[in-house]
Image (cartoon, rainbow, N blue to C red; front, top):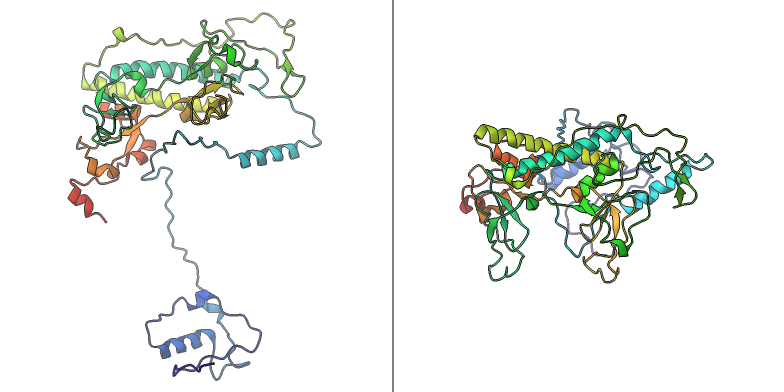
Length: 442
């Protein structure tokens, strides 16, 4: 072996079984000093020297060399983050993720089976046993009225807050002029280089209509493919409210007063209700239902104060609708296709083979049903938030935020910005005045 040319002798290896000192003992050493000083610092920390007790080269790290934790650290917690990413737009070739991963669902199922061993079988709770959840009946009426109120107010608000829509794609913008971003993917978009062709739009572009089949018996057999045109389709929120307890004469549904009797895994029979007295219509929960106004009866607000009050009422109806629908979703099953936006209100999806999404030929048009989330039932339709300057520049796209179209309309109408939407609107981000100023940002 070639001898080392360094003038400093190397440390001999330890000859006794002693552990090395922890790495945090050497954190304070600075290697920019001369090598002799560094070696002296190492010897003083590790306890190496000619006069050290014990065998030659033995490490003896002092107990006081361990770093002490800092008790003066400050932790700042905030439920609403300063800035948040925009909602992800999934590709048409990509399946929607499950709200709860399949691995977690299997783990919970195994845990339930393990806990149920040796115990008597419990009866099904409502609404799985065919009965209504009585505490959610008032909530269903509030959701139904909030939807009607939201539609009526949006029709009035759109007369003073303009909403533009692209003629070739489904993108919309809240403002007098459309945004300048070249994001159009519609017909002949390559000739226009992705530029939108803005025009007037309707209410359905802001508040997306999501329809579902109306079930006269929510525990009945699944809708076959041959009867897909015989079953009426109504708004999914209305169907959810009907199954939760709202009584509409034009959409009759079966109401059970006794739990069902299970005779198999998926088979059941209705209990005999002959011994029960006739239901008293006065004992049912009843609340006045709002009606949707026709377009010729819509009157625009006449003053800025009336516009502000209308915007605040619309925003309150939007929040009431989403919060109430979320409570109903936790008790009543709602299914959505993982490939297309088809929604079904019930424990299991229908059998209509009308899915036209990616690779539907391999599935023979059948839907890939999975548990739905709130955005599947009430799509928020995010749009660009207009800054205080009132102008969007395509070079500064990364500095702008987004908000749901209904929320953006209410904000431009004079309502205050809700705290939960400030993260995606990026209100705390400073917007440069020009592209040159944006390039100077570090």
